Amino acid sequence: MVYIGIDISKSSFVAAYPSANGYCTKTFPNTAVGARKFIATLSVVEHHCVMEATGNYGFLLLYLLHQSGIAVSLVNPKQIKHFARMLMTVTKTDEKDACMIAMYGEKMNPPIYKMPSQAIILLKQKKTVIRQLRKQLVASKNLRGSLIVLPYRDKTCLRTLDKTIDFLSKQIGQLEAELADIASSEFDKQLKALTSIKGIGVTLATALILSTGGFTYFDNAKQLSRYQRAYQPQWR
Image (spheres, rainbow, N blue to C red):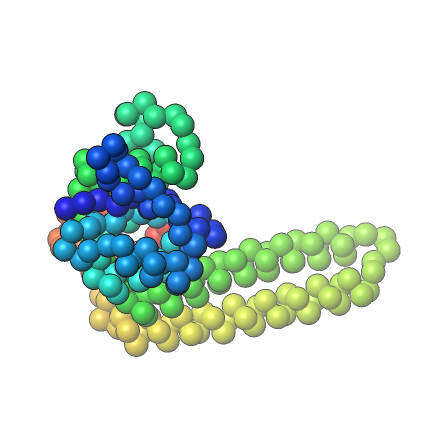
């Protein structure tokens, strides 16, 4: 198996291909067209791509690789950083990073990524937006509270904040209702099993389902336990 390292940025990605002299790199636009041009250079039988888990900017490529039948692994950036440290590598460019990721794949043989279902992808988006809206809601309420103690209050500012707080509250409520509907329709069995455990409510149960892909990412309880210890903060 030939490992291809991929370093992702917002507008482009660099792919590192093994060669006789080490690695050669090529840059592609981080678009559907760029991803398909890259995939055209690969073989389903021969190649295994390795990417860092760096958020949404790499997900389109990840999805298209999966759809094309190309093996792809998603690796925690901390693992790549630790691997580079062991090799005493300090130079940091996109090309060098892609080569390091390819080398990591060759030496460590990371597991193939399991693509989440459409329901999981939608639920993660809703949960992310809800979290951001809640932060905005808290900030707006705090700002309003700091204004009403002033001796002279700008009524326009207060009205604007009141409208913003009302709007954010309604949007959060709507998204939470939609999230609950999707979770209950797609993962009813898991939700019922989890919420039957003392101390686990719907919010935590949904977070567990999201983090584990509906418990499809693991083959046994031991793997789940190791994952829980490594990523416990994101389950809250």
